Amino acid sequence: MRALLSVYDKTGLVEFAKGLEALGVELVASGGTAAALAEAGVAHVDVAEVTGFPEMLDGRVKTLHPRIHAGILADRSKPEHLAALGAHEITPIDIVVSNLYPFSSNPSIELIDIGGPSMVRAAAKNHEYVAVVTSPEQYGDVLRELGQHGVLAASTRHALARAAFAHTASYDAQIVRWFDEGGEIGEAPTGVDAQLTTTLHLSLERAALTRYGENPHQVGARYRVAGSTPWWDGVVQHAGTALSYLNFFDADAAWRLVHELRLDAPDKKAVAIIKHANASGAALGSSLADAFEKALRADPQSAFGGIIAVDGVIDAHLASLIAQGPQADVIIASALDEEAIAILVKRRKATRLLSAPSPEPLGLSVRTFGDTALVQNADELLVPISEWRCVTQKQPTAQQLEDLSVAWRVCARTTSNAIVLARDGVAVGIGAGQQSRVVAANIATQKAGEFARGSAAASDAFFPFADGLESLTGAGATSVVQPGGSVRDGEVIEAADAAGIVMMLTGERHFRH
Image 1: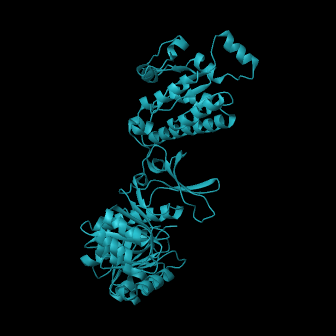
Image 2 (image 1 turned 90 degrees about the horizontal axis):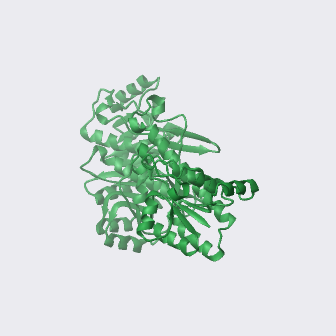
Image 3 (image 1 turned 180 degrees about the horizontal axis):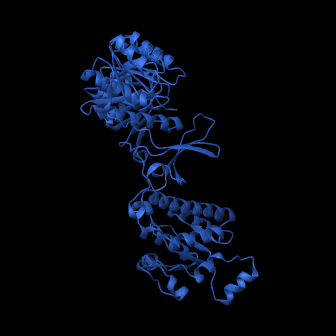
């Protein structure tokens, strides 16, 4: 039995090679792999000895040779293939061990591997006779099976081939992404193609299984784009049950919202409480404890079983406040001290306690149904407050602008149709996911109760009629922010002036489905 070894990632290489050697497998190696084996004293044959041709072009050509690829690709069931190998004195290769340059670590032309993918694909194609090993994580299982049976089962070779094609597909996808971003010339496409290329190559690798899917009868997992390190990879779970699909989904929404809340008020602290991806409460405060109490007060009933996101460190004092409140499914913060963890675990062992790094910007949004996908770039709040346009006779105060900012940011992350009321830095009323904007306004004012009076309101899209606005002003809202753009904007602005309130237009809609 002969094995060809040519790897970039040399984790476990020497131990694996020694294991193969102990099983009587002849080793052939190239380049840096051969050097690593030589340094470790592992007997092997250099690829150049097999091919009779030296490496050339700075190593670009070394394994691309008939004596290598014929040894990999020969169909052992065909006498003519075996005869051809015999005529040219080519020894069949039974195991190919190869992993590719980590392209995404430092994208460049020189990290586009040619020989590696060629060997991997050849071995995977011929997996009826050849085993292809593309990850150090496979080494142990391969050695155990060879040691027990002397050969690898057809099912094992099939699984290894599948992993090999996934390996090369992921590698190619990373290269395509680099070209889409401009490649070596650094000039990305313009216009629509700048963000939505004519083809989309996503390679996703499973990062974690979820406890279950959206419902207990469904299975689920978190995947990441191959070669990327999303913020979720830096999350530490300190306690609690395994995360479910919805825990990931809702915690991501909570963590992103709590970071956005402070963008217009960097001197404040922020807390968001999320239920089914929508905020039940969100607040700015002078301290994290202050922000939490305000966020909870907005809707304590909906907070039960929700996600608490804290943009800072949870200490014992804040943990005690949280423990006295409604049960939370997930608590996520920048950090939790040991005393805080003990307090929260005592309150409820199942609550997931997470510490997390700041979230990276959202990329493309991809939604699939069957064999169809809808793709769009991330919904960002692009228009700053400084560019909002006041269209009413009454001008906003500094406090109104702060409250409008909170309402607008929460509204943009709330399922449409959405209306949000905020007062004194707190989202006090949230109407989410309604077919009617008037109904959304009524729900928001009902939830806000007495806090609706003097509040700032946000609408994720324009008011098609004045009735939605009148619902807000009737409850006591004194300022409103909305995108504008309706053919009846004039009527709505007249209604705002008649009510003596402030109205700001952003020119930017934020539907969320």
